[in-house]
Length: 80
Image (tube, rainbow, N blue to C red; front, side, top):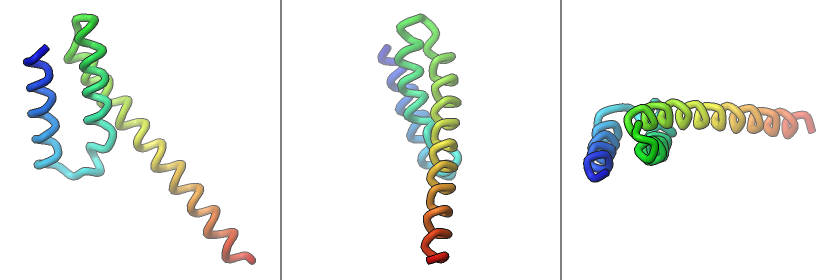
C-alpha cells in the first residue's frame, strides 16, 4: 500500500511538472480513486489506469457542458 501511494505521488508530481495541465485534467484524481479501489481488489495498477481514463472523460464532458451553456447565455444577452 505504501508503494502504491508513493508511486501515485511520484506520478502526480511528474505529470504536473512535465506536461500541460489541460491534458491531465481529471486524470490524477481519477487515478488516485481508481488505484485505491483497485488495490482493495488486488488490481491497483489497472484501477489507476481505468480511474485516469474515467476522470479525464468526465472532465472533458464537464468542460463541454460549461462551454455550451456559456455560449447560449451570451447569445441570449445579445438578442435583447
